[in-house]
Length: 206
Image (cartoon, rainbow, N blue to C red; front, side, top):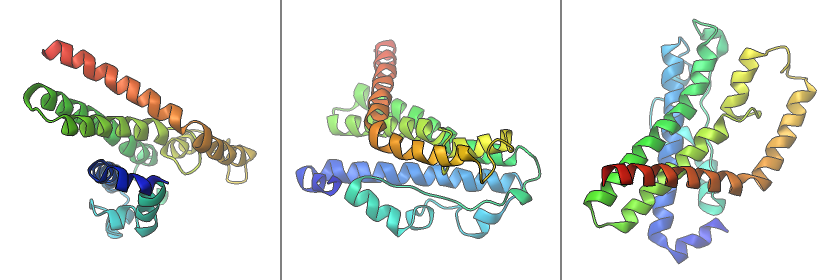
């Protein structure tokens, strides 16, 4: 169980939980902000223009994070309020692109830490933050119901993804299979990409 890591390495456990909460809250905040800019104030009126994890994630998500390491967030949107047909697409893209930006920020901070500070733990946690956000970037763009990638596809191909479509049923099954079989591979790939970029930047800066 994920919670057992608290007793094995409390400092690393606390740092990882903080990174997940911070990254998810930033992701959801940007969804709410872009939705507001595009004409839908639903999330803003519901109090989602905040980094408060109780609002962006909720108690159940936070409890699940502590016990099994899985967390999520969600902001309400109303497609009818968008001023442009691209409103939903841009709102959906805002979250993953925020994680991509955080990936780059964490890489830069990790590089600065490696070059200027003798703090291995801080460097490792910053590298973990980069890896986590790359995972969130990729995972949320998958065309699976409940994820941002699926919302984008709905806007681009509305007839194909009817609510009663067999495509949706199959996509839900794909999500379950993905969670149980591919999560480790996604983290490994994200870690390898992050490490490669870090090493390249370190050689360029050294």
